Length: 317
Image 1: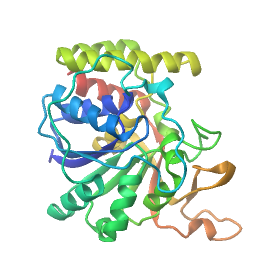
Image 2 (image 1 turned 90 degrees about the horizontal axis):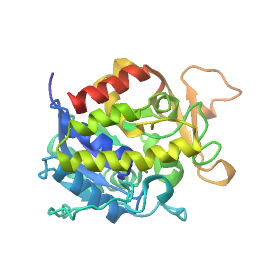
Image 3 (image 1 turned 90 degrees about the vertical axis):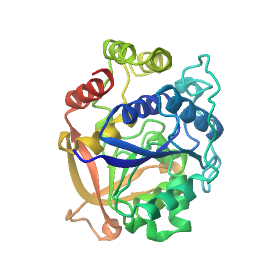
């Protein structure tokens, strides 16, 4: 299989950490770089964690460019320390990475890399979308240079996980999300409609952690335990949903997902703030106002067991 170059836009975060380990472990994925954003943590912590995970994974050469620390327009809510911990990785002792972030901000990094390799790079974004929105503002032609954009976020039919209607990444920066989801580039949304159908059980995580080097395995295991406690106490689930790894799974194995083509929009204000609105292509409504934005793909079905099997096989061999 031809190597797939990606830039991973991330806010690590426990499930981000799992996904970062995944993209480093897959020999068919070339990690051109990581860009960081606020979301699960503030951006400085996200950058620290991305640098550390690359180092622990034996790939310290992966560039990490720091990006957005605030939403485009709204006042940010506090970061969810009760889900990911104060450090984003489950409140555990963490070493200081030896590497430093790239001198460029995240948006410029995205622009520069897609100029260097037009038509080659997939953007896999698993946090709030401010970095992609800023890159669009600085260089609108980036929409013609990316191979594809895969977004972990949103919900077409499953409701929300931070409000009754909004998924966390979209809610954290709805104005940025609206710009990104309607920009006209080749985009697929991998949202709660499918990520909630995947579960990493404690037994799977034990096998995954044991297959890593000691330091990375410990970070993944301890952060998982913290995250799984949240799921157990608040959702009644024995395990956790590997939301961000599902976007990587779609990159590698789109055949495991069912997609529907249509039009997306985002509510940016009021009680519905952060809600993604999806109008399937060709669906008749009372007017065409819901079908004005460019066509995208939305994941509406998934073979959840096959996705988690692939995650485990990639990380544990």
